Image 1: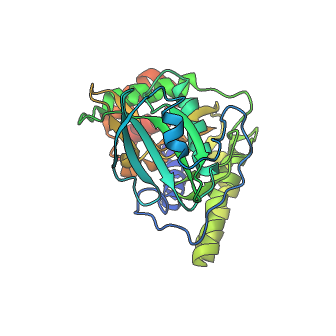
Image 2: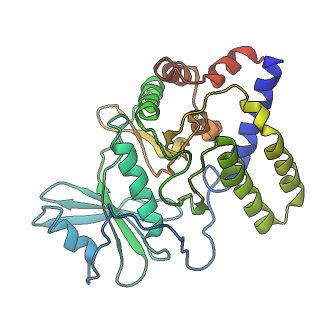
Length: 310
């Protein structure tokens, strides 16, 4: 019975993964029109004043640089444009998007700040979010020189340290709604994990799938899963942990010293094992999970399930 329950939990996790994959692992298709998300305001981030070039203005004032020596494009994926600003005070990483208001970058910045403050795994420190005078928005953050290391043990340990350090007394959710890829992610605070996961994760993704693709069958099956998933968490102590929220291979790298770095979060506080929902396209192996659970000592379903299942 115990093994069968674990199998069911794997199915539940895979169902979540399949829905989220529309905006993360599979190359994304930008949504039509101007994107705008109704995030709540957060006092810790000050929006940049409008100017002819607010990015340059911030770097040459609050960024403590006196000279911008060069600007070069470094990609940025299918959603944003990314640039490196080289200055006499060091490089800055800047993302811009001409089609969204600052809410999307504000959500990213708040997530990066929350992870940064755990003093565990390395993330780029965000400095400024603002509006572009010609439309759209930007985010300025720490520039991290990437290395080539892919130490899964180190990643597992550091991620577990972040989960242990990042706690919430508000329950499950986050201070603002944010995005996973370009898809809005609802983070309304909820005291019960099953309710939060069913309504704001599985349920919300199912609604989007039905609206965009007209797939009523997967919606109906998903709703049955949501109604019956309470038993999968029976007798499990679930503690709200700070999650990256979109942990796939494209958002994992390392710095030049070989330390793991995680990027582009969709943060919220949730069950620690929800972090592994994207693991099918993150390439996590045994060394990652062994290192994670050595540090975590939280409900180690994945570790035991991997040993129990053929």
